[in-house]
Image (cartoon, rainbow, N blue to C red; front, side, top):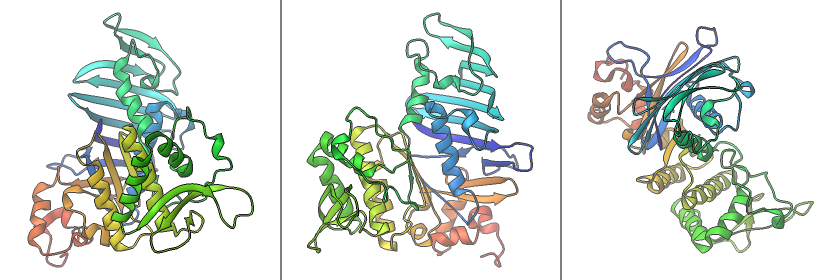
Length: 391
């Protein structure tokens, strides 16, 4: 299932208001942000790239029931969403204020399945074949309730929320997260890929579940980004004051094993991401993969190769990927067809992409400029209508 459209606003009408919208069409504001299978969100500093990732992550936590509205930092928000689920279009609207539901509406192919104000509303019950009244806590989403018999149509939204993967590539990605006891890993414990810190545990589970196929895929992927390794395993860390276990690799041109404490941050980020990404794809569990600051800490060639690899692995699969970057070298080598450019105006981040600005995106190839210039000159904003000074 893909997230097709989103409009989001927090603290509407207040001084802290901020919203995500698509480019105005014929002067009409309030357009949705559109996403495709593969998306690279770019923008100048402080335009809203990480905010975009965090908004989608927050949505997944709410739909899965992992978080209640009252637990949110931004507890007054509006989501207006459209999902593409094979032959079905799922439209979902959610408005909450100070951690309490104001409105919640769900339609599938235009047919109402849920209409709610605060604690009360009506939802469709399969056994009764009718919309019946219900009441529940006003800080919890109705679509997060579990009744597979009466409301099976909630499952796609719940599964999307539960299986979303979130990687903050500019962070540690589990580099300082170590295991004290390998034997304590429980096979029946679900793998949580939203926080992406348990890389050693995920590797062990992947190796047990998928065997050599899992490790070979990681080794092959690492070689594609110029990290030539012949072995990967979880073992006791060297030169560590207490017994602890972490991920280690044997590099082809280095005699000894390099464990995760000794790896460069860039190498470990790439390894961690590929361990977790391959686990997800082999398990056939991810719905949407969020990667913030893709390529951070890697040199230009490896950043480019890593993004090409991710696109190769997910293209044509049931997985949607949304990445962000402000690295000019990465931008120069990623086709504009994948881009969503954020343009910041007061209280809003506006998104320009191939779907809503096709003519401008197509025209840019005649300029002879680099992809980064598409952003830096704001060509995406007015195209050839810009003045020569702007270009």
